[in-house]
Length: 180
Image (cartoon, rainbow, N blue to C red; front, side):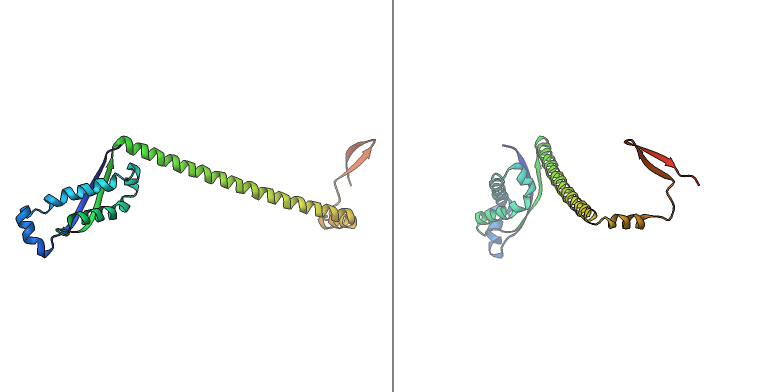
């Protein structure tokens, strides 16, 4: 059980047919009997909520408070509206709720990061698979058509002779400079 302090403002009107009886019976102070009824209605509705929900869902409580109040007043005074001005909790409870909300946000962030990493990994795997397929197709094309290698050499040639020549003697490669 936690203490919840709810401040409300009641907007009301006294129906014309009840003005005289309200003036006589309550010394023209209708709030003297309206206030306890409203307080009981607030207690009844708030008690059905957790402390956290009473803060988060304060506007959802308003119609229930209005309904209970109107039923109990029996049209002596017409309640036009009830405004929930403030819902206050103990500092300790407010800090606990805040910590819980921070933890929930961090958990949501972790889920999002995990989903993002998973999506990136799947994208990388698809990209790698596509590149592997392209290399395989290119390798098959080169294997079946050796003239394609000659064509690629000619296409990439910049018009200059090589500056070094690779020779192989007895299993080792030697780079020899080509001088003019």
